[in-house]
Length: 428
Image 1 (spheres, rainbow, N blue to C red):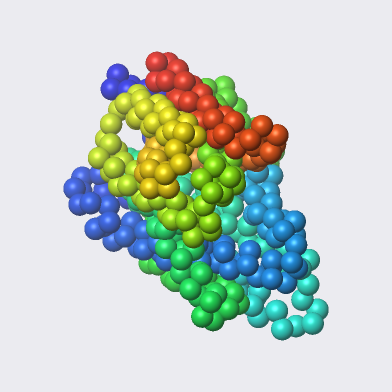
Image 2: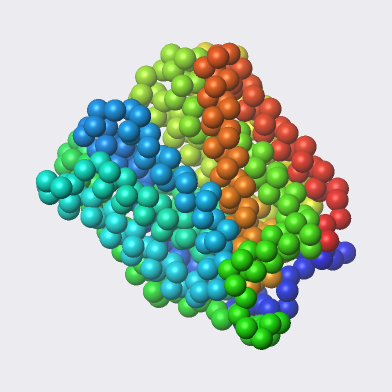
């Protein structure tokens, strides 16, 4: 329940490691454990950015089919939607360090198998799809496990800052990954680029092996026998909807936000080409501008990590409004430089949402239930993203890119209204 200060209270089951760190004043990146996690994520995120283009390039080169190439994106999206709640149960049950290291090593193996199997005659696109799907499952486990593990080596007052710094590694991957991938494909080929990504996962796992994860306080079981998976799922759903309805409002806000932002990510090349008449190089520059905006937002959130919860919600409101307004501004500009500035502003606005939302979940949910709450949150957000891509794809095709972009801006403004409602509500 929230206290007088506006902060969410957490369960007494607090990690000893986090309590010890609470008294430290060093910046997060100067602490041993978080520095190792951040370094490993920076390496693997840049590797991910490199391999995404290489994988799509390889599939298109082999099949010559845009439809078969688009299946890759679909396979990467299904696991977090379908398996998110189940993954959340296992994130709560199993040691997070083991989950993280195992996920990284499995991803290294699966992505590394692709270039190794290419010379084999039995290797087909169907086999590639299976490897990509299994890789997506491992990634779907890694994300919630990493977010749920932050309270084990980061003090409570720095949750938002930690989430922001980790989001910064994703931004750097967006900025540098595609450019490095293009150079690597041109110089060596897509197979070698995929091998490089496998190495980055191994390096990330090596960093995680050195991290000292705190141990949660012992939890007295309420049942004579361990609960079943279904019971755990029901408990997580009940907590998120009944006991802490604020989490449901947060998930609804996230769904509205990703309904718009997911569509923007998928359809932006269409908007840039039809509205601004830009080629692939210029579109790449605009995409980098979005990544720079995300990075600047991540850095800026370091100064708000100690804000009251309501103040952080108000920040989500203002940044969502700014993003929506900047997207609407793109409709009336034909100057690519001004478009780049607006995309940077959009990136700044979008970059504030996720670290703040994750920080609220980490503060509000008991330590033994963070994984399940994150699983339900992620399923809602990803489902909405798919819905937004489909809806705005149809709108853009039928009514034109201006109408589609205006609708995406409207979705972000609607998420701001819901966040504003949350900031005025007592969450129990």
